[in-house]
Image (tube, rainbow, N blue to C red; front, side, top):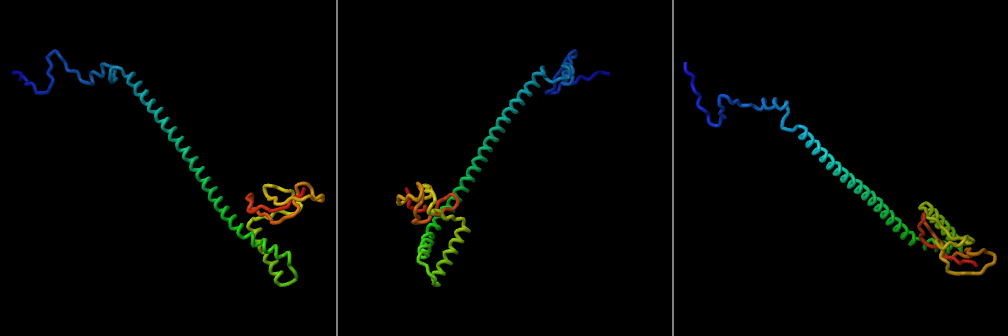
Amino acid sequence: MEEEKKEPVAGEPQASADETVTTDEEENAENGGQHGKHPEKSLKKELKKAQEENVALSAQIDELTDKYKRMLAEYDNFRKRTQKERDGIYTDAYGDLLKQILPVKDSLEMAMIYADDSQLSKGVTMTLDKFNEILGRLGVEQFGEKGEPFNPELHNAVLHTEDETLGENVIAEVMLKGYKKGDKVLRFAMVKVAN
């Protein structure tokens, strides 16, 4: 029987009789079962690349964390500032209203100087008592009494007198009482200061 000669197929590698075609598996086996010429270098490159990515991501996380903390602090400051402004607006409006009402109380107190036993005087007394009660509930304090030491932060000295019976810088007379709510002075007391 004659051996048939095979015709070469286009695209197929042709090997001579003494040549052998090595496959990838055979080449891999020859290299000790490892891919590439230097597997350690390849792993080191991958490790170095992963470390560089890790450093970059850590830096990005630190930057974003810093931005977040700054934004949180700015928001907290904004919230506190707006709350303080809101309280200030309320306190100012509150104070302005009380300043408008205080002259009515002054008039009632002046009327009490000339009070007698009449029904009208009793009505003025009751009105003044109610006025004082409401101011007390609102937290408004009255200050400026005869004999108190003069305090320029609370009192407005409009007159000066020499009086040996009173000490130095003592209120000799109160022309107009002062009022405050908490630390805020609504109206300074107008006083005459002795010595």
